Amino acid sequence: MKNKERICLFVIVAIMIGSISWIWKSKQPIQLRIGVMAGSYWDVPESDSYSMLENVIREFEAEHPNVEVVYQSGIRPEEYEEYIAKQILMDQIPDVMFITSDMFSTLSKNHTLQKLNRFIEQDQLNTDAYYAASFDEGKNQQNVYALPYESVPRLMFVNKSLLEKENIDMPSNDWTWEDFYEICEKVTKDSNHDGQIDQFGYYGYTWEDAVYSNGAHIYEEKENQVSLGKEAVIEASAFMRELVLLHDEKVTSEMFDKGMVVFCPMNYSNYRTYMPYPWRVKKYSTFEWDCITMPKGPSGGNISQIDTLMIAMSSRSKHQDLAWEFMKKLSYDQTYQSELVKSSQGVSVLKEVMQSSDVMDVLKLDNPGKSTFEMHVLHEIMENGVAIRNTERYKQIMQAAQSRLDALMQNDEDLENALIRLERQLNSMLQK
Image (cartoon, rainbow, N blue to C red):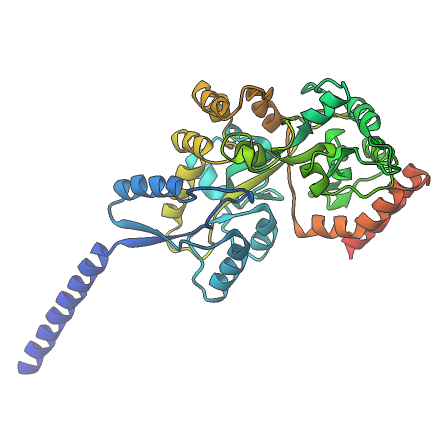
């Protein structure tokens, strides 16, 4: 009997200890870890990179009393990718992490990121609410691995002072390759007659810019094929050859900064940062400047490349439902997306936010009186934009093709035949 009593007592004590342990554990807050970098994601000055995140955290914790959202501060953008890599190796990867387009390909390929298709379908998330270029950047084939958070389109910066000096009108937002070339041709000259060209049409405009603005794509992900023999790509290549042959001199970013160049493609984040005071007096202060859309090709439109900062979930997270809810609040909540546009240097990934009169009014306040850039054009740019696809395969393609393309832009070789041969070489490489 004593043995039975001891066993019963032991069982009761064990149950009590287990119950107490369960109650104690259930009262401990769930910790949701966020991976975030300090400063601007777009390489421009930013005063407070955590304010938006902190606002979301406060509301999220109020809605989930047993959840504590934490993040490590002070990780600079240039250190962030290495930080995430170390967290993966130590099996301490954050539940939710901000990722750039450069990081996306590797992280989605090595199964670090959780597929989001199931969550999107369960919540019936309206993906059409996003700009297609912003949403597409988080996709790999048919799978979604990240939600968009903030985008920046590529715009054309214009040296208005140099145009005025040459009695040339500012181009409109529906300008064409022909307009672009004519202006570049007119301004490219030796203005002080010392035997050296000291005025230039453009810096930084690329073959890829021309291809996209002519309605073409270089690489088809679904088919895993390069398409360079299309008429639109041949037209873009011919246009770039004309631009390149305007002069032999190498144009640099410093030349644009000094006011020697009319056109230079840059991110919208540069416009948001350097157009208002006080930064306007610290950069590009020696000449009047503004920005417009990218020029359109005969088969395309005023199409910009769109770079997007995304939010992804770790495939190892033990709190995936909570991680998903937090991601949605950052990406899909119109209140926070509106707040983001007003306080950061980027563009909201939600169409309705960028068409809001309230948001438009705030953006207009940043523009000095001489700026002619119309903020409603941003919505059109985002609607027509294409996602930057920095996948490993795309990087390999461009690295393999670049020297050949550079040579083609500077010689008189038949473009159609040369591009078709290059297409075959690249596709053969992809098959291997």
